[in-house]
Length: 125
Image (tube, rainbow, N blue to C red; front, side):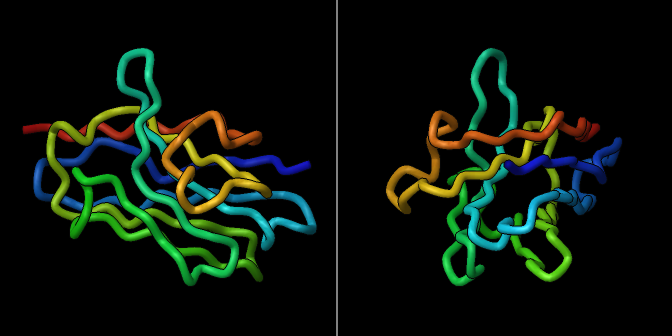
């Protein structure tokens, strides 16, 4: 069982930066793939993901080159550094964890069993 809590959201001007954090509970967290999703209407859009070791990362096309996902397994933390923010980055950001997702399926929300409550990011123009 894994519990996730996001933090770090807020209001920022376009071009600014934010760092989101995902704090996890559970002794085996280091074995989980973690991803960030953004709520867009009824859908949760994939933003970024990182495998358990941190060696493999994946990004959504709209955030490549601007966002960086990282993790510190010793602290049970995953981070999303968001730079050069745009108004279209606005939304509720969720972190999610999965023990079984394979690389080719990392973008699919249905692959993640554990979710946080979300943190709001608002980018003003």
